[in-house]
Image 1: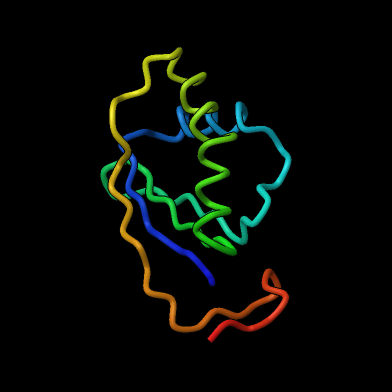
Image 2 (image 1 turned 180 degrees about the vertical axis):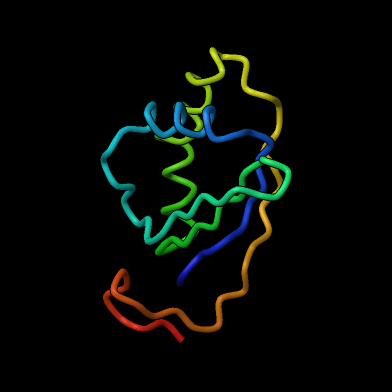
Amino acid sequence: MIYAYIQDVPIGEEMYRRIIDNIGPEPFAGGLLHLCVRNADGTLRYIDVWESEEACTKAFEDRIHPAVDATFGGQRPSGEPTMQHLDVLHASGSLLSTSWA
């Protein structure tokens, strides 16, 4: 089942690029789409689409949180920015092997 969310994060582009460098170039297993867009106030918004919630959770545990921790020098802010889960009714496109309804 497709799992998707929007998350506003209180960082700017420089910090984001450092996190991405720490994550590395290898695609996430189960990751279908990650968009990072700039909000009007300079903070960032992530729009993520995953094959499943389990794939997302594993990516956070194995790679994303360790990369964020490394970027913040072990002093990552406590708590996770709020995720707004999206109720996906339909998803299609070249990143999906089949259409989900």
